[in-house]
Length: 115
Image (tube, rainbow, N blue to C red; front, side, top):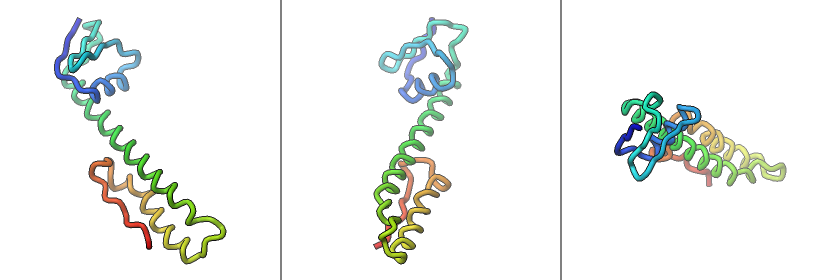
């Protein structure tokens, strides 16, 4: 049995993502690995945790972006004047492109919706 101390939730998620059928127990911040042969190194755990946290932040960014897009769906309806559609199309495209510039909800600068 291997016990690795001070493991975060994100590190544990990274282990689950990187090792199929991972057999470990996370109690508090202590990770107990049942089979010593299968236990990852501390460096692997830290890397996987960072990767998992990055995936989660990008996922949160995409979810917020999708919500903002959905809130503007009305602007592309058939009964909306073309001038209004055009203004909102640029904003909607900027939202779609947001993940090309940002990879975290924590650092994103959202485009300003038209008035």
